[in-house]
Length: 383
Image (cartoon, rainbow, N blue to C red; front, side, top):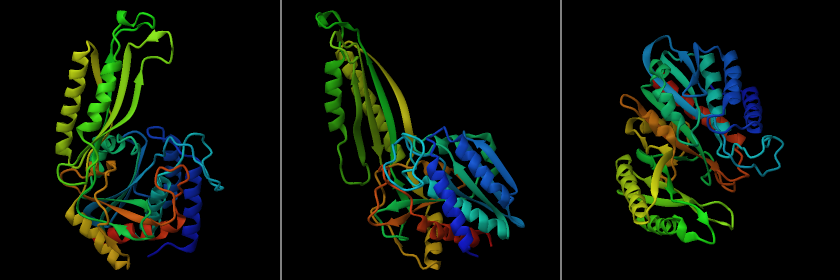
């Protein structure tokens, strides 16, 4: 069973509609409503809403007992102004579907059309429209939601479009495919003073400068290999933008990155220790906040084999390419004990803007092959 020409046309229009109305992480209420409305004609056996925030899951039961197979897409867009002249460009200033999540949702909706026409022989298919991938909070919130227990999968799969890779070519390997990462916000507290009498206050300026240097040297860029770590200074702020005030506070934002989850705790401990030492040396207070917390995304070997078999059955090529990637993806949170999970990076073609660029647009031609891959996996596991 494949998508009809009418399916492809309607799915293309639906994808472009989603593209016009992007919503960022944890604000995807209207997108979730659009998903629920599009699912209704497919008559799933169950639609679960408000999973981990605005998440939506549609369940299609098979005739006989069997495994639960989950396919995941992301609801959220990016807080980036879109710069393109497509008729379906974003209508919301400062927001854009510039990572292709509109396309990923469309792949799931296309799979839903096929599964609704021919239910699995056994088991069940779960279409998981997940919130808040871009800030790393969504998958963790979904799997922690009590309602998720009823649909906890035996298998979980995802596809991420990949511009710069040949159209329809898959990047696939078992093991780590995306690094763990964590945003660490460090706040240094001192005492403000009049700019003419800076010695009467306690400025965090020297501590901030020293930390920027020390973090840059703590884990510089290096080839991906066991033990890989990276620290990137992403933002710094010192005092208020005024000429009459000697600063009394500073913020430093750093992104910590590691190949393995186990290495992240050690890297964070080192970063915290550096900040605490600098604060102590300069008579400052220090506080820490964690943001954008991504676990490493690890492809299970058996789930990876299922994707590979589907690609080969469809005559589509694949190889490991340059996996694993430095970038992070929260799909790894679905790989809990008892769930075999894997993600495929599907080539969107050459000559396209990169992901997160202000002019990226998911290619509609990728809808049909993406749906075919998901459908083949489902058929192989549940027939």
